Length: 479
Image (cartoon, rainbow, N blue to C red; front, side, top):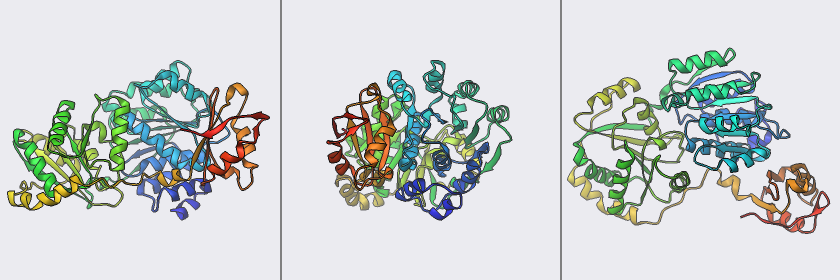
């Protein structure tokens, strides 16, 4: 991948982060979008989720923002909080060695805390429309330096009724900017938006091969409503997946299925919009790490959630929206791995099946439920797996993060300290260069400095006897 990026003069710091994140071959959307984005062209990209589009806009954004500028230069709008948090994490990882500071802002989280964060050096702001608009109206999100706007999952914003808010946001931004819109489908009102607010956008369509991939085997099982749960147990016993997502239509249904699995001894958890945001993030992080193999969820978890190696997706309730089928099943068969998607269909749901099949362009084969013998044969293996200790997965950013130590200094803006003061002092230490310094956060009475490349301990020791801008500061490892 390094070779691909060197052609576009992408800086070494970003190539180094991509190498650490194991990005090898660029995906189709990255090949088509990155060169255009680096030429600062307005883009309209039609592409399915799971096609690598976060990096397609994240890499150019990290490349183009200027580190020295303290005010936000890029705004990324997303429909859900999970996706905002995920994109923030991706941008932070891609821009790690360039010290890019990304901030996520969304509802149900302290406005005051976000306001403070936006006062500090921030290069990229990722947020949901309602909360972004809130900050713009209250003047807590400065836009005078904003050069790049990315609207991600535009069709989902429309489905969730956010499109008017998106328009209000656009109207408050500088006209001199580069705008990119990413969407799986192109409904009329999105076209309208593009037409009104963009300059001669380049249209890029990534063929929706992702849906029909050879890597995902799709199947339907006809079943009565009251027999679904026992079918779920039989199916999971026969498939015995390492990692499995089970999608339901409502929050109540998620609660019921999760409780049923829990009683049956399955290591599992749940995710839906009725849960506190902090709990949602905690569940998602644990699932990504492989703390438990079974996650029962509503569609809130079907978008933008990137978990390595989900082998099985079960549509416990068939999705009512045809697009949702693609987003749910697209959680498996990612990054070149094989996956299975099984959908339960009750006698009255044939119309949904027909709609989905028209949309994806092929008929989904109907299969028989697992036989009693199959289930019996697999029982021992299944029991062994669910009773074993979980094998934890390495997080994508883990390699980046293992060499990083975050230091705390007991002085900040009140003591007139700036990021350059820390860089100046630390970069002069023996065996340390500016390349060893990561993201710096200056708060009113505290500063946090990331030290990279495993040099944290040495810097910590050395800084105990050094002054920053003539001031002696307490320093210790940040919690």
